[in-house]
Image 1 (spheres, rainbow, N blue to C red):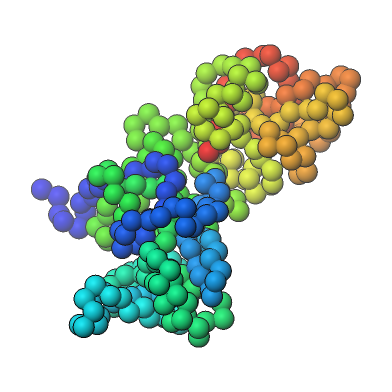
Image 2 (cartoon, one colour; image 1 turned 90 degrees about the vertical axis):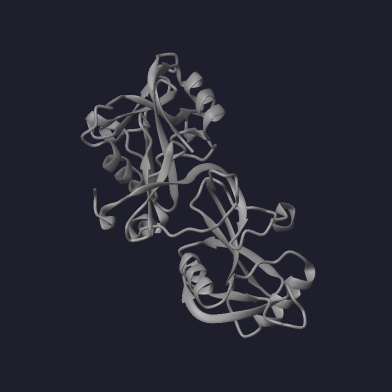
Length: 311
């Protein structure tokens, strides 16, 4: 039998749709926290200062507010919030509150919100509360916000190697890491945030590929910075996926300039020959070829190719 120190076991944490969770498991009134952050980025956590609520990267270092449940004997069920004037990530703050108090504070009504504001008057900067927005869910359907990721998971601005086809292992050190499920072809692109990318080994025209990615993910892959390209190289170097493959590049037939599928013009570029294809000789859709230095080229939009989605 393997020693206890070497055992890893599956737990019921997996990726699903983004949702709001209170750290203590309280029910969230989603409409009270609109607008929500973009679901295309890394997990975000809520901060509060006076009347303002903002969403921040959960790995930022900030003050935070814990609470003690049943702290007042004459008012069972009431909560005493405590502002902790130490800078921690949201995850570390959660652990601290659970060890020394009850949990990170939750806000379920205007009275609790006013109490949190009053107890936070010593802070001149936003501080963490117990609200998390991410795409992890426990298999029992619960919205528990417990997260105890291994250190490697939260480095590089929270850059997980998990996509929708990933689940979680519980390690001997009592931390969690993610691994791909069998037959998963998900990769992770991390630069300023994290964007999961999906290799699609079906040959489609550029428009068909775009429609497929929009239906099943968020769109065709965009490579907007040199850092993005570096992350892609790390994922594909040494693999059998070569190219050229469709990415989210297209040329305006009317004006001739190149744009990404989100409508933003191409700034940084990686065209083969270091020259952007120009009308009237150019094709109007863009590919990337891994075996040729990840260079971009213009191709006939009707040709059938593999492609890469993001989201």
